[in-house]
Length: 364
Image (cartoon, rainbow, N blue to C red; front, side, top):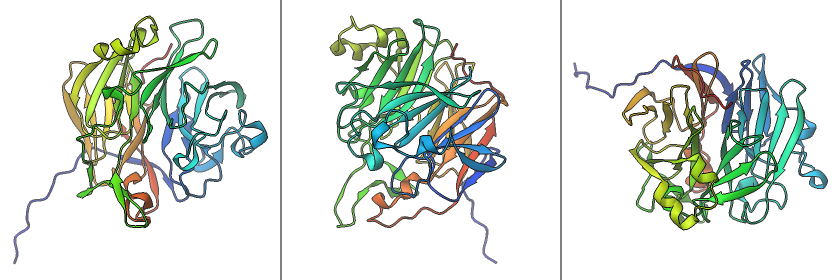
């Protein structure tokens, strides 16, 4: 009888919340009342609606189907390709529309940040961006909010461009004024020495014609401290974690050339897509190379709270009032673009959760 050989240990009690048998999801957000919202960017799948709510176990277009039917004659009030949805804890769902299906150049005037009232399910505010903010290379990825500064608060958005400068876009929610910070800096750029390895294979662009190129994406994950004073962020193709004071980001008297000196380096945390913070200031980050979820404490110490073969590319996180950490798992690395045109994803994609016994970081 052959002896049983030791195998890798997996841990972390994950629960399945929802299975997706259609388009691939990227974003999740749980509201203060427990409503769950999902988004589906248009990356080649048959996306019938780019924003949805899970209602009694089924996906329903949100806020309605009409808003999800892109209308070229009214691109500010209809969604084109949504990458992120964020419930702000005070009755609003924010929708971040890249306006860049299949990572194309953003449709002019279509990239936007949209506020939807969760009581009326109606769009109440739309913020669009000037051409010096959303560049031809821009891919709006994720957003965090703080309503304790200014008259109406601020939003902080990552530009995760694959062929242009990464940045953090700062938006004054009172007047819509927006500007780029850390534009093309090392901390918002792909790590040129990083070689991602997922499921034992180097992750790179592998085209149908047989050509290959490195996989490179800029600043992606973003999280805000519970007091709103610091932003944590990371490029998608990097293992590094950075932070910067939000006051510094908003202070345009500090030249862009000097802003890099205000960035704090937190060390390696694994290669992450999404980030989130809880009410105690802990940062949660995925590790897509190792099927894991990390927790970085305010003192910089790090622990792994889940390591499970089902965590095939942890994308976006959300912390709910039930003190669970929700995570979208979507097999992003198995897409056809990385495998010479062969789609290796296996449905269903999943929304998982793990009990962390912590509340979401407040925004107001």
